Length: 142
Image (tube, rainbow, N blue to C red; front, side):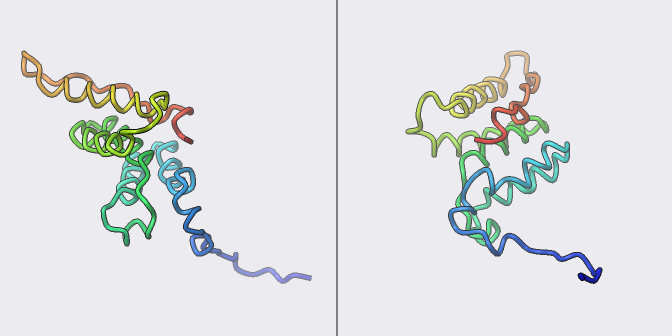
């Protein structure tokens, strides 16, 4: 009936609506997969694309605070606390009126405070990296 041929490739991005493009669990799917596979550099690059100030780079999608939160956790786990602090601050700025019970908000506040506290120590040494919350199953999908 059907002849064997080359595999058909479909670009699903063409069929994504504006709403689908802005759902965090769909928008950052590739980044989460990279992170789960241990491909941290690729995950960081994808999250950096998702939080880019240039809408063309983001393909018109909105910047979701979960993307900033997850990027901050990756930066922190990768030994870049300054970059992590910038992303936590940006996420918390958006979340300033969020429900106080939202786990990511309290985690971001605690981690940001810890990063700021680690910057200056009396002996001049840096603190040890915080354990990354990024790969926690409860925080992968909002």
